[in-house]
Amino acid sequence: MIDAEILERHNRQREAAHRRDLEYLAERLARSGIALETVLDELAAFEVALPTWAMAAGGTRFGRFPVPGEPRTVFEKLEDAAVIHQLTRATPRVSPHFPWDVVDDWAALRAHAEALGLGFDAVNSNTFQDQPGQPHSYKLGSLSHADPAVRRQAIAHNLQVVAWGQELGSAALTVWLADGSNYPGQMHLRRSFERVQESLAEIYAALPEGWRMLIEYKPYEPAFYATVIQDWGSALLLAQALGERAQCLVDLGHHLPNTNIELIVARLIGVGKLGGFHFNDAKYGDDDLTAGSIKPYQLFLVFNELVDAAREGVPGFRPAYMIDQSHNVKDPIEALLQTVDHLQRAYARALLVDREALGHYQETGDVLMAERTLRAAFETDVGPLVAEVRRRRGGALDPVLAFRESGYRQQKARERSTPATAQAPGYA
Ligand code: PSV
Ligand code: MN
Image (cartoon, rainbow, N blue to C red; front, top):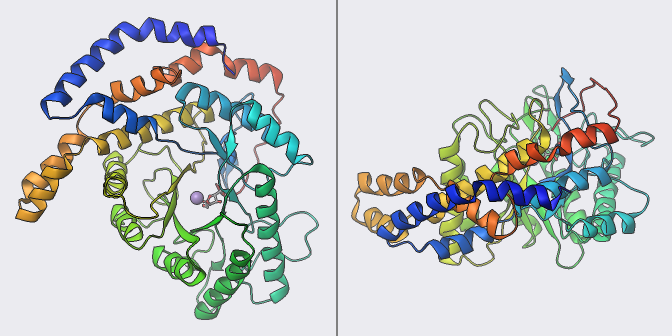
């Protein structure tokens, strides 16, 4: 964790300027009939889970460039996650990925997290890589594999992941499959989907009380011709066939260019099947870039749908917010601090949308004014709002700068000897 003194000094030095910025914003919002305190309360409720797999440098299939002092174990990943939560006060949970995060002593891991003020979000299974010693290969699929023995192995892994998740106090299983085909004719398109459904049904039937299953979709990679759970339609078919506790997970990078993601979000909300998000951003495909770094307007429009649903009180609406990024060139901790800030800004802007006016313009067909209402919120500088929420909860006015001032990375570089591997870690 970062020394409380350093954090206090950081905030003290910026406090006067921050207060002036906030007062100006409060006055502007008041003119539009928006109460600052209401927005601050809503914004303070926003939480997003950190992915354990994004705490160390990611990589591409060409190489990986480790960051000095990056975490080597899940215990160290939690230490870094705790720093992110300390500075943002918005990331109280981490989402583990198995078997990457398997430990011998689950009670010790849970206690370690608790001591750091952290809990666990959805657990992720991995049937996209072969593990040492496993009898069957996932080269040609896992839950969809033509061979029932491979499917049984993949089902057993998912059940094992749920059991580990129970040890940690998690309540959701995220399933992402690399299953698919690289060439036409490789796989029976209809039957492979049926087999996934049957396999998922077995896992679903064994879910503990109170657990949800989140089904992720992805149009391509590593299967380049046809993935089995290709799109939100496929994920929705599965979720609907499985039952109430199965929902869809929207990973922002898992869409072909120009897909209208906010529309997908609206559709899933409409049928009660929006289970959660993997936030990131992309220019071309599954780029795993910092959320909001490429298409901030799209991120805002997604949050606009979320706020709209929350305000309306759509029954059963409680999406799990998670980050899924690969930090190939940025310091992972800094990138995550920046990500949380971007997410909070998108959310804050969505909170500022004048929904009554928007509804009126939609009803009366005033296209220009409807769009202008959205843009007015999007163009508001909400930086002071987000900073104020952090300050009130004991976080940093500027988390990235506070992190740099703390010297945490340099300290960890001395303490943790990083294995200088240039090996690609697989898909992120
Ligand atoms: C696949 O690209 C993915 O988005 C899935 O969520 C995986 O679990 C994650 O990345 C990490 O590999
Ligand atoms: Mn994902």
